[in-house]
Length: 481
Image (cartoon, rainbow, N blue to C red; front, side):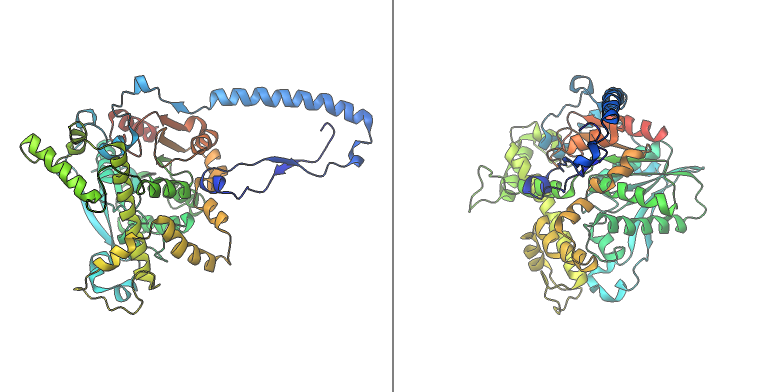
């Protein structure tokens, strides 16, 4: 309304199912425009012309900015990644002949180290947790001064996960010192580094991770480091965003560049997407035949057709080209089942450390010889949503005086860092348009916030193309500036 001096402000966030599990939908609501503001007619007319001019300038400016800062959408034809099925890409990743040539472990100066960050767990954890009472990590070092890059693993993954190992070799060959870190949701990190052993609140997970990174640096005071970099894949990418934000005030590293690889935008959306995959109806599975039996039968026939057993990096890709290849439904079930195991691991470990009694009776005696199988089976019945509802939210509410679930959903997503991510030129995102963890509006959010710092590939599923030569070159190019 011309002449109205009142500003528009966002309406309250619509709390329906669509928005809590997808993206935010804000509306601009004019407030405070009363008749008393329209008494000076000449000023209204002058304001009308000025407002029209300013609106036109704003529109033109927005168009120019959109052209200059649009996302880098990679054309499918020029990209050349061979797997267009997102489930297949997620499982089989890149054909071996289209991956970069990287050094072998024998050619890398690397060692595993441990940190004693939670000494009290030495006495409170069961004896059969002896291997994770200290947190392990891996450091690959150059023989000269070099930049150091931290890599944070994805959901439930340890520092030695296959993707971490791949990224280690890529960046080491590129001239970096490399530190491989476990996910805050891995059972070793929960046991040895997490204050509350209840991962899922991004800010708190980032604070735990930051302490680990500071301890790593303190453990190697003579390592000649020129500058620091940070990356993570999947959930580790979300963690990296929050760690970078934390470092803006703590300034232990002053990261020069931060790269987020296939991050969840809204963690709750991604969790629900993956949980739903377990519920896929798969042909051939009934009360007498389980999914695992079906998989075993297919693999057996595959090796019979080949005439020998060869368990190597090319297995899954080669398997998918055979007559025994998995259907879309079977691949969805496989991805969902893998995620369900990770969720069960998290729920089991958190309940055990905190003695909540949800999975393991609080006073149940656990020794090194105790069988934990019955309890893990019980944990498998609790998906990630169940873990969030029964363990994360009660703990979070107890510590924040009972805030709403919608607030938590927002706090564990990139939405919580929107202003920071928009204004920080050092942070970039590489994602796939067909990633199974993305929900409605997620790509739009990434485009709006990151602009030309978003590289969007047409195919690759969830992290399936990270070991593709094109992606590898792009990662190195980003960090080299």
